[in-house]
Image (tube, rainbow, N blue to C red):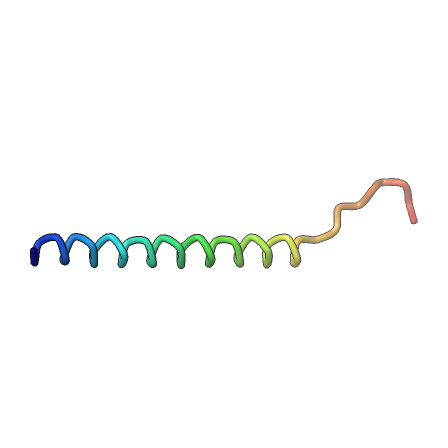
Length: 45
């Protein structure tokens, strides 16, 4: 029974770490998109 509990806790911990990594990656993508320079259209504004 203790082994099952440890496996369940490890799985939950792994899931939480995975979700945090995904959230950090999504936030980094947003910052990258927001701070990218605007590409010039080449038409001379």
